[in-house]
Picture 1 (tube, rainbow, N blue to C red):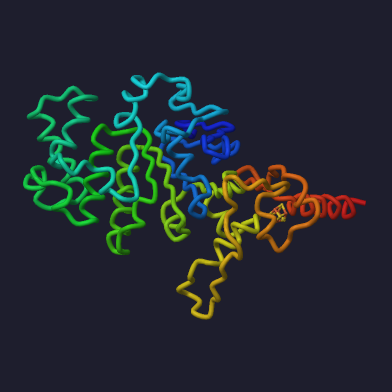
Picture 2 (picture 1 turned 120 degrees about the vertical axis):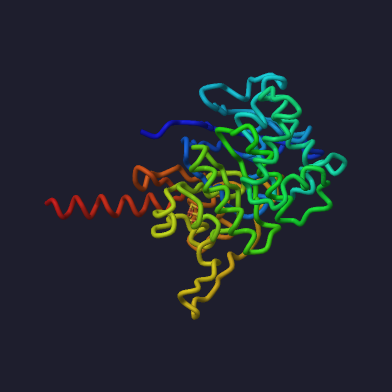
Length: 336
Ligand code: SF4
């Protein structure tokens, strides 16, 4: 039976701005089991990165979790003191970012940055942490690991820096890894290697992984389950097979139509018209209605409910109400 690792319930994250408090994440709920990869997808600005920063409690100074709960291994993180959270971060939960140059410290060697979490969280001596650091660099496929330990981040290539960041994140064998667009800045060959590496380590360590991405190709490759976000809300969630074979939300369908298909060279790529609303835009009804070809009066005035498609699949769209009503009417008439 699946073992629950992380349970996010009705998460609301707001930012204090000159226009007042604005919601970047609006009542998002999802969970991650041990050994499972959950992908959070959507356009830039949809709230996916803020959701992951909220889980790690790494929001910028003007951000706050104003509602909801984040339970990790049974502990409530939103109520935890900073010193308690520091013991978890880099130890039981770790994060890797899109651009390792911003996450790696340019004034310390790779060795220093990889030894520190091992000394602090695992209480290893300098010598033991150094040995372990070399082992970790080897594990993430870095050649000449002994030499790399004394180098600085600017001396490494982009792919190498990303591997170093993964090695640091994995140093304490975390139960949960959050990877925020970890391969976006890399070329496709390195991207495939990094994704394979995360997947192999997930199997080996039994980690749960949250992969934040805008790339449906990455989702198809690594996800067990997918959560699609739009304008701060979860709009669809499903296991990866259902999401690709039977997407329900018009936005998800739009995302899938914008992915190239190598088996069908005549496949026309379609862009979703319009752009994401700004955080300070007041929108009534469905937050996607301005861009949706199926929008009705109800969509413009009432926020959609979340409907269950099957045990593994939910969607937040009024079209589902019509579909489920038609299905039950058809069942009723066939029973007469
Ligand atoms: Fe489109 Fe209406 Fe569904 Fe929103 S609720 S996605 S506007 S059909």
